[in-house]
Amino acid sequence: MRDTRNIEIGAMIQIEGSAGTYAVGPASSPNLLDSVQQLLTAGQVPFQIENASFGKYLKSVGTDANAWSYNVYRQGKWDNPQVGMADYKLQAGDRAVIYYSGYDANWNPTTYLVDSVTLNPASPKASESFTVTVKKTLGYDTPSPAAGIQLKLGDLIVTTNDQGSATFAGLPEGTYTLDISGYVTGASPKIVHTTQKITIAPRTGGTTGGVVSGGTGNPVVYLSVIGDSNKGTILSSTTVTLQSGDTAYSILIRTLGAGRVQSSGSGATAYVQGIDGLREFDRGPLSGWMYAVNGSFLGTGADAASLRSGDNVTWRYTVNGGADLNAGSGSGGSYVGGGAGGAALSGSTPTDAAQQPGSLL
Image: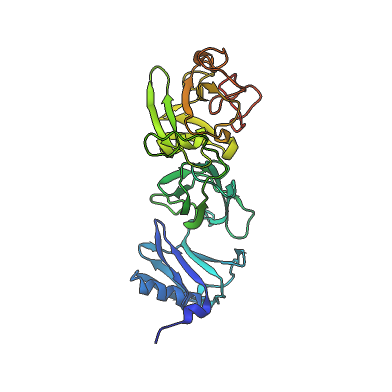
């Protein structure tokens, strides 16, 4: 007869080691330690449970020994159990996390749990940049930024900054698994490995204007990317299929890939810091990236500049705040209020909707 006890319990078990996940699965018993034993046995993972004066405890799993902790996420918060696993009773909806933990010289724990994951914007769209912010906790303290941990989404891997944040861009629509980890070679993890589903919505709201087909009937735009005199042409004029909601920023990310474009901010505040390793300020305090549509350097952020079929988008690297590109002279290309993605104008910040390389702040 099929065992249905895990359905009745409705709890999940997650066992995380020093360098990876040992096991994840449904609880097969209300008793946490019993469920852990059965899950590890089913996965053929070696483990050792010992008896002590305070009761049974998990001594080792795989190659990790003598530093196992646990906590239970229950009803939207960490439960912080005050009993051993052998005495803990699971409830429906629980997520029990058993993890290999580090400690400092005073026996203060150094391996944290994920407290929260926040997206900005909350519902990112395809090819749009967005920021992921992670906070960490020991379960009983005030949550703090999870700095220096690794976030993986699709093929993109980034490390969080001091605020626990990292920016992603260039993902097509779909559902992804955000993988959060803080593995340290030869030491305990900084944070317990955690995963979370993220949905990237399709871009909407753009216009495509008249159809320029290139033989297929599909609307297209043309994209080129030109660096400084040393870097030269990064991308010769290339035909790009125009999708609904496309902008000068989204086609850049989709064509080159997020790995070749360094950016910050999200949505209308998306800011291009570098392309193919050539970054703002690399050629002086007025150097950075600008973009033009049909020869005009626009006054809106690159991810707020909607495109029409047949538009010609050019990303250019300036070494003199746009003067070398005739961005403000009225010859060789007009300038309409600002560019996007370079050194900031005096009084602006790298997340302003409109930017051009200009004087230092």
